[in-house]
Image 1 (tube, one colour):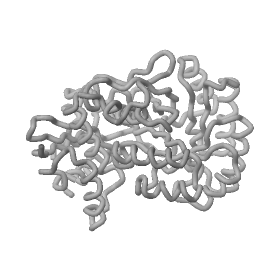
Image 2: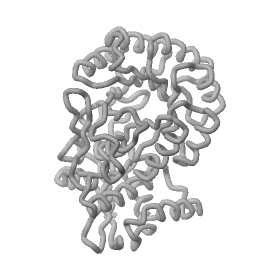
Image 3: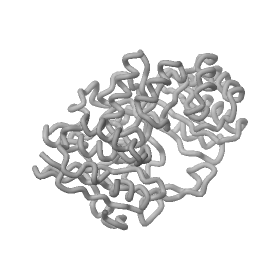
Length: 306
Length: 66
């Protein structure tokens, strides 16, 4: 990545995207997360040059984004219910479970969460078993349970590359199937998933999909097909802020995803995500990403500089 | 404007940022990251954090060498 970018014009993001595609194909085959941070840094330069926060530079659809909380893996089904109720009371707009891998424990967690938060159209429940279902039949059975419980979407029930089974699931269930977050190829592979009905809702993020450029291309692709592109957590707080800039510039993205644990929210930055009492996340308004880096923490954590 | 230099930091927090109980089926408790700074001849720098999972060396070497 470093030799590729040295000497180049930082404002020529689109050119670099296409040049890198060929450069990478000819024997590099970099991991899915390699290009993203470089693209983000290019956008950071553009924002600073324009003296604008990224969400405005990208076109600003809104100034704040409704936020749902995304769980980690908890010890018991009741732990999920307690967490869901707590975040509902804090004003968030929804809660997404990453449930236990066991079918019956997962179903218990889904049911307890619904009991805990009640029927409230403002507060959505989502299920993300992270490929826990080995086969279409099991995913179908769980999907029908989630429909009875009025869950809002069913995410990554099977591997993102299990196109055939996902296509059947999308056809056979009413609950929207959400996926593509770990699929390589960004919007190019997502395009085929849209065209052939693999999912109802697509996913993208600035870390694993190729940066801001990739997220916006994917979102606009989905918009043209009348579909949502829900931006998925990038785990690291600085990358979450960049995700949020994108969410605030995409009309067909309903939520910002905030990952628990909250201890991650300050990793390497001094201005963590600001989420208000009504569950809206506000992007920083400083130029570029608007991130205030915690250089003392970063210096302390640095083991090498290349 | 040109990119005149690129600094890639390989970072491992001294304390784990995730606890074992928060991840399923693994013993992962560590989370490495990269800090990438693009320096320009116009004096404007672009900075980003980069995913590294549990392998700052691997992610950093990919970022620095290809």
